Amino acid sequence: MREIVLDTETTGFEPFQGDRIVEIGAVELLNHMPTGRTYHQYINPERDMPQGAFEVHGLSEEFLSDKPVFAKIADEFLDFVKDAKLIIHNAAFDMKFLNAELGWVKKPLLPNDQAIDTLEIARRRFPGSPASLDALCRRFGIDNSARTLHGALLDSEILAEVYLELLGGRQPDFVLTANKSKSTQIETDSNWRATPRPTALPSRLSEKEKAAHEDFVAALGENAIWKTI
Image (cartoon, rainbow, N blue to C red):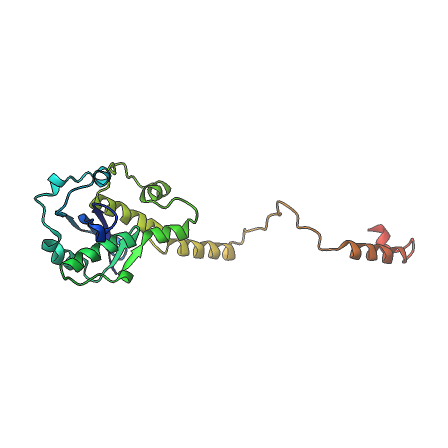
């Protein structure tokens, strides 16, 4: 199974209000393992760079001025992606920009169901916990110290590690396998012994039933065996 872990950097938040993609980074996975193949491209947005966006990714208008425009790289990008599943953190954002750029140059759009959103996966696995890429790196002990600024290729490489951890590590069936092994051990280990409960279960005998039993024992007389127990 081929997957592409992907990230973009942009000039802002809304492509239909003039914002554009300025960088695409992607990492190829085959059967959940990195192949070493990557795609990376800086793109001339043909517009100014807002200060807020520059502070996020550090890509200036001057730096991007001699880079190709999206129309020049669209075919190369689509050829790399093909029909692979796209692993994206906050997929709606990147898919919105990619399809806007593809539409403007009359190229086939990427189906939304081609994307797998790791943000949604993280929120399902850890409800109520922070689910940013940095927060997930802290949770899984992934080194992201090189991420002083957002960069599409670096973020894709980090996201690939996060994605594999969200699946259960480099062996996605590890949890299932571990549970099977534990179950087998319990069933076959002749030395296994039940241990006492740390807290006793509450009595299932109601007060009414207890009083009725005491009345029954009293009616049996002083020599009843119940009196000696």
